[in-house]
Length: 404
Image 1 (cartoon, rainbow, N blue to C red):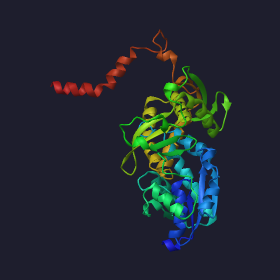
Image 2 (cartoon, rainbow, N blue to C red; image 1 turned 90 degrees about the vertical axis):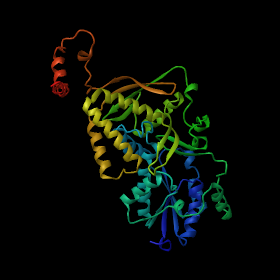
Image 3 (cartoon, rainbow, N blue to C red; image 1 turned 90 degrees about the horizontal axis):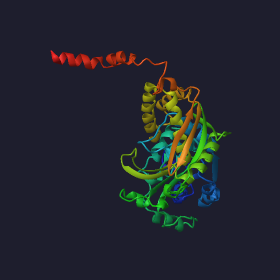
Image 4 (cartoon, one colour; image 1 turned 180 degrees about the vertical axis):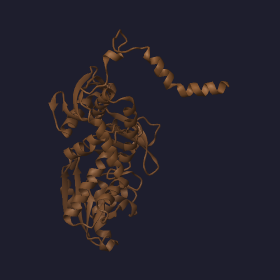
């Protein structure tokens, strides 16, 4: 499909500088095609969505669809992902990664609804998001053309984009003074750019948006109780809540204690390394609680396999492979482990840490009778000798052969 053949395109629209410039650029470079703006509410905050429709229409869009995905995002993407225990490269709780499949899916649904023949995003050619969006497009609507302006136009700076809009009398609140690139949703907020581009620079407090500096957090710890059913948080401090409501409440509780800050230099899918500061206060508390339940219910070999599954899933999610058979299989395996993940965990919040200090489960494999250092009537320690002899038998045989 050539540029001249595109009649209607649905743009993933944020209202920022890039997507504001993309709307007129599409109309000019694709023979006056109709541009429909699409925005997803994944819990990034009302201030991010305020006036969005007006901005889109002022930039030349024919209409703007703002879709509320907050509850679905947390219940259908975040919580299933948490059953895997996935953490990318040991630190990143996959906040941006988890939001992309549901956003791209909703964009496709809008495109099919309005009869569009193309999809467009404002991702750069350097990042992960272009892969995440376009992999979803390919899985759900391969017949639609994909337009990625950053891979086509010759503009390369904020100044050029601002001049482009000014020449067309299109209003934009962006300026040349923007330092950071940020992305927020109900699960987290990420910050990149500015001083973070030099790994020798410690992040300034300007890098952090949601959380209090641990040094400035309250001197007294706070405790929060999470009730877990089948690997999902269903109540906070005894109050039954939806997944999204639980996350919102935990964000509010944990952020003042400096919980959830991560400064990571990660490997992007496209090959380069990038540095980001991530804030995931409520999510960090949930992860601590779920690990506490895992410690109670998973035997050694199950825990080992689930840890391997977590690493694999973290890459599948990070790389934008949500709508794949592999992802479906990994989630099914994680759900099977989560069947017994029921119980209650009390998490202690103190100066940037979230620690599971109390945990119980009706499916716990922990037995005080067997584990005690005191006297017991259930464990015959002499049985350990035979176990050790069999466990080390191959080493014994090898050593005996070497003696001959």
